Amino acid sequence: MTNANVSQRSDSGLPEALRTAHDAIHLPEVQEMLRRLSEYKLGIFMPHMHDEHTGQFQSLRDEVVQVETGLEVSFQPLEEIANQTDRFLPVGWVWRAGASIPSAVCEMVGEEKPGDAAGSVTHKMPKRS
Image 1 (cartoon, rainbow, N blue to C red):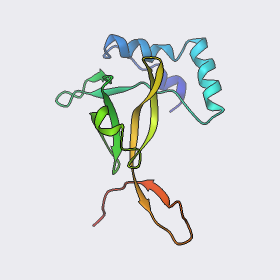
Image 2 (image 1 turned 90 degrees about the vertical axis):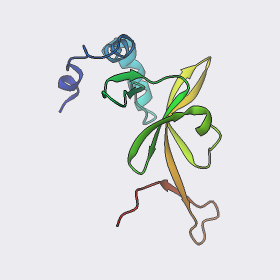
Image 3 (image 1 turned 120 degrees about the horizontal axis):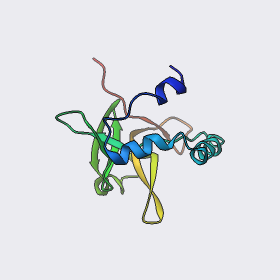
Image 4 (image 1 turned 90 degrees about the horizontal axis):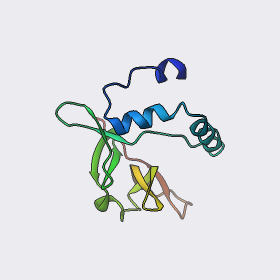
């Protein structure tokens, strides 16, 4: 699948705000931002969530953050996640009220290894039986 055929898929089922965001990737200034971000191994994403009953796309509300834990995604109140910096690693940000704030995080677990004073941090994975 190439960028050309993925980007050309219909976005007609998206809410207006998400359709605007989806269409913006084709604008020259957004392509330039993407090029500049790529120098830092960053990209662009469209913050969104889904209706839990219908699966329809919805804009990610300002007070909600996408949380990945154990390879599953959920949506939780930002205020519950924001002060748990030892547990959650921000991996997506949005610009709100003049500052960047996390919009997506991964739940982490720490592992102490001999000779590693700082410890090692890895993504929390599901327990396998």
